Length: 257
Length: 335
Ligand SMILES: Nc1ncnc2c1ncn2[C@@H]1O[C@H](COP(=O)(O)OP(=O)(O)OP(=O)(O)O)[C@@H](O)[C@H]1O
Ligand SMILES: Nc1ncnc2c1ncn2[C@@H]1O[C@H](COP(=O)(O)OP(=O)(O)O)[C@@H](O)[C@H]1O
Ligand code: SF4
Ligand SMILES: [Mg+2]
Ligand SMILES: [Mg+2]
Image (cartoon, rainbow over all chains, first blue to last red; front, side):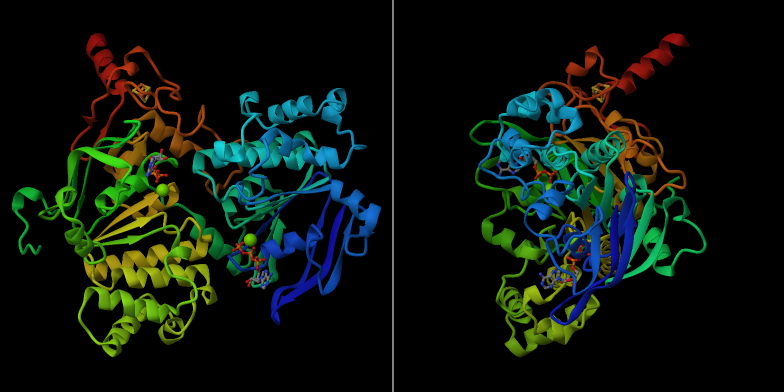
């Protein structure tokens, strides 16, 4: 469904990504991990069509994402949604949160997601269904973003992200700014939605534990290069790249006795 | 104030916080309640708890920097022989930076943009000591080397030319220049990736040994608390609900909050989990009376609306939960 074919990108003559390829099948979840500056977000932005690669191309649902224009581009947008790291920054502070959640549905009046069939005519009812989907109480519908906690805001962002029933959801560090206990809630939610809606997921994070929990396959980026790529169950295998092994080692807890 | 010997009664405690309470002046809302803990010489003490539980606020009280809208209603904070809560602003300024260093999560804003890092080091040094610019530069370079940075280059850089990890190292260098006795590190790695974060904590441990100081490590990441601290205090709703030797608290958590915190943490696993255990209710919801955790506690019972005292389980571990007494009574009755 998504094919990234040997893309490269440079900023100020420094390579941010070199020759990256990856494929995401329908319903599959892929994790991208790496240190700060390794190119994770750049990859995300290119896949979302927000940046253009200098070399290589990205095919999404059969067409080249970076040559699409007009209606075709808009149509592909509907199938491709994102959840960002900063829950505060991704919501309009002046808009009641329920309005933020249904905004994408207003931009695409013809789209009828399966879980909104019965209520498609009623904006408020759609918001209620979406709130329910992400485990938010309907008491919060009439609030502004600053009146919600980080975890609640992030769930609003997820509700918005799934509102059009996209094929692919890109999450860039969706839980890095959240507290441990809230992190667990949001990850459980994402995993459940991914299964229920048969979403494909591209999950970008520097936290291997989060990626291990969420994804079936993992790609490791180091200074713009994909140094390792494997099935999650092989994370601890002897044949892992030394850099992957280092990341794993750093993420382990000591045993306490 | 300089003290040259520690009385034996102090058991080499560097910092002692006793019965500390803080409220919001206007609303009289309690933010910190009867806080009690001490940090001994040379140890790393961890403070863990969800966001809003009062970790940073505790740090600001220790630094004597609490906002004008808040009020300390009871208790004392002693660093060595000095009572922080009764010092003048001038005395406090002398202690901050010199005796206590503060590292924050927002290392991004530690340095002023558009002024070279070296320039800012010189300002800080000359603010605390009476030396020439040339000598001050030597001092700055010395400490930048200590935190394993390319000293000359960083000295001549603007803040935005450095990476997150480099900036955090530079802020550590400037914090330790006066060889403080206590370093307060408030979520020092939260904004950094795993590798960079671990290297920063390695550096802090190394500096602790070299300067023979203590560290108060504030974090919501249990991995760091487990890997790095000797003693831990678990905070919920402005109170420490469990405290003790890190190994004792983690291997035998008593308080339901500590337990849930341990269970819901993300960690690398040999077998992949299908669902992460989570806590009931919303973070930050705090009961007004009795146990602050009672709104979210799976074992809540009638007596939980009464105040819970701290009870100890041996010399290195105590907790504040009615379950402890209930269990004791049960044992007594069945016997
Ligand atoms: N708009 C830009 N202009 C110049 N350089 C950029 C730009 N965006 C990214 N870069 C550079 O490209 C490299 C990769 O950046 P990217 O944001 O993809 O990293 P990342 O892996 O997402 O890091 P983090 O974990 O910190 O989010 C970095 O060296 C970064 O400084
Ligand atoms: N200056 C202030 N005025 C009013 N409330 C404050 C102030 N500073 C902190 N608080 C409140 O005190 C509580 C503890 O905050 P803080 O110590 O920052 O938590 P954390 O454990 O996340 O560091 C929170 O409820 C916070 O909103
Ligand atoms: S005192 Fe009661 S409510 Fe509080 S943690 Fe113990 S059992 Fe739960
Ligand atoms: Mg990024
Ligand atoms: Mg804080």
